[in-house]
Amino acid sequence: MTDRPVPLTDAFASPETKQRYVRRLFSTIADRYDLITVLLSFGLDRRWKRRVVDLAAPTRGQRALDLACGTGDLAFALATRSAAVVGLDVTFRMIELARAKLRGPATDSGTLAGAGSGRCGFLVGDMCSVPFTDGQFDIVTTGYGLRNVPDLTKAIAEIHRVLRPGGVLVSLDFNRPSNRFVRATYLGYLAVTGSALGWLLHRDPDTYRYIPESIRRYPGAAGVAELMRSAGFGHVKRLPVLGGLMAIHVARRSA
Image 1: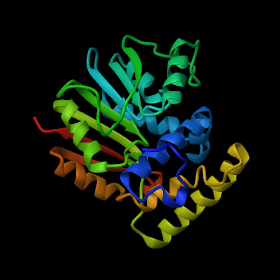
Image 2: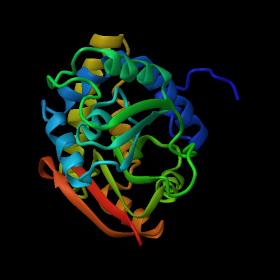
Image 3: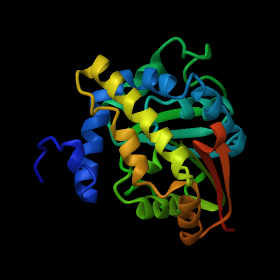
């Protein structure tokens, strides 16, 4: 397979082209990733991630896996709650930045990176082929991860596989509103804002236009909940965030 750039118009043609596009995209934006998540969430991203950790409710000694970990915010937050955490991301530069935070003096929230009674480590890996054996983790979290995988059904199956019976999955992501007017307004805002940020930061308006294009093809919160049930998860809940423009899923692997 070649590594030629895939234009946004072709990014969703197949799982392979989406995978190539996403890998190149996140390598490009990695050093701006924390800034972009703050801007596109109206500064609420950290609050949402704290809610994810509260819902995961880690306890001392539990093992947690944070998928599509980015620069490590959720992984560090889980570690401060005494979990032993592995952060996994397909983008090498994201892992470099997360490891730099781990060695650094402080995070933006003012707490020591990796502080607390837990342990925190990072590695490069694919959500569709998680490099761990069955039932290794008590908790799996992901922030903005499921929408970006080339095969959503396979990624959810992999999460189910690596969770122990009774283990919990908590996922935060954009939603795809069912109301046509709300959806059109929402995607229009993201397209215009994304184009402006892409041009200002990377001289490429398509850079963040990927977000609304990925949402158009995403099954939305209700569809993702059904895929989780089909994969064998029980007690699946979807919690609206920002008036339903975002969503958190909580699901347990049946005991």
